Amino acid sequence: MRIRLPVGAVGSGLDLRPKESDKTMANATRNVKKVVLAYSGGLDTSIIIPWLKENYGGAEVVAFCGDVGQGDDFEAVRRKALQTGASKCIVKDLRAEFVRDYCYKALSAGAVYEDRYLLGTALARPLLAYHQVQAAIREKADALAHGATGKGNDQVRFEVTYAAFAPQMKVIAPWREWTIRSREDALAYARAHGVPVDQTKKDLFSRDGNLWHLSHEGGNLEDVWDAPQRGMFKLTVDPLDAPAKPRVVTLAFERGVPVKLDGQRLSPVRMIETLNRVAGAHGVGRLDLVENRLVGIKSRGVYETPAGTVLHIAHRELERLVLDRDTLHFKQTISVRYAQLIYDGLWFSTLREALAGFVDETEKEVTGEVRVRLYKGTAEAVGRRSPRSLYRQDLATFGEGMAYDHQDAEGFIRLFGLPERVRALTRDRVTVDVKAVEVTRPVQRTAKTARRRRRK
Image (cartoon, rainbow, N blue to C red):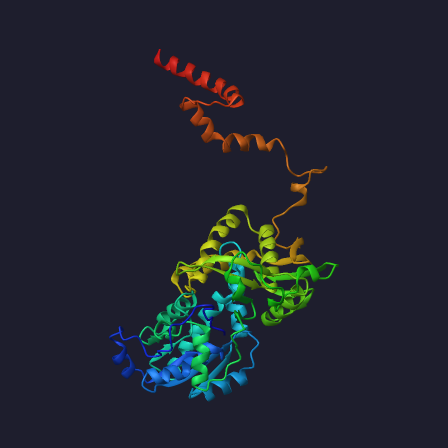
């Protein structure tokens, strides 16, 4: 887990004491004896450990780190936490749960925020926060802490989950208490306290990675007119450098869950890892997005989501094949709200869980295969089939042997258009369109004649 740092701000100093305006700080400090910190081993959470001990009366700090596929050396992370002052570092492998119970659930719901963002960070935070709470309960801690800034979405995602499962615990958010305001300030504090860090002042990008995606923020991306730097990307090749020959992959779904890639059954983690490599090699999954944060700020992020991009395209095409028109259209409206709930940190809300019940019902039909062509940054469905398909060639064909009787359409159209016919017969319609006038005049004359007869 990587917590973002604000980039480019200039701090006013290194007064690291809690704000004096917070009149409850003294009492809170005396009451906190043990804190469980959401820990990544990055710059910000590394300096939070000594800061907590300094500013909360020497409270014991337990670091919690969840593995959601960010690719860190977790033994090194553990050593660093202990070296920095933590009494213990708990590392928990959450990769399978993350993909199975979070990424795949969002996939089944078609959850895409603001039409484009596939919710990588937003999906991981509730899972990490939930297991952090469970660790705090086991450790008999009385406070929870995180390294999210006061400007972003993650503070909400962590704390809403804390409230859902441990409302009695105090929440400590150092970025809302200390006066560190820049990467330079944080680096200075780390040097002063002997905290080893890998970041330098030249390392301008803030990244968050997990199995589902890798995000990039800060640096030159803060100028929305400036293009992403070519060397910034980690999971995908430049589409211009991707192979000249396309690759077609076949994805099999069972009840909305991807289970096979090119005929080989894969576990959820293996599915994502394999598709990330395959699609990333063809430049698939890049996204440059200006999004609306929950706190009211617009921000720019560049995302790499190779596997998620391919899976969403394949899943959507399979749904088009197996779901009836009304269910498909209604689910599209549900997907927008579902995505917003995830983005806003409301994974454990009653509404999200209720919508998930509807999604689970629709996914009973979503079994089949989809072929997707990967080519120079694009992913396109080029074939689909399902034992639950509602598509019938004999109904859709324009050739001979049609099972559809064209004459049946006449009665359907008369009934479907009946409200408009009734309206025309009961209202005087005024129109300036010549063709429309010619069409409506006979109807209007008929209506006027009928009214005259009734008056007589």
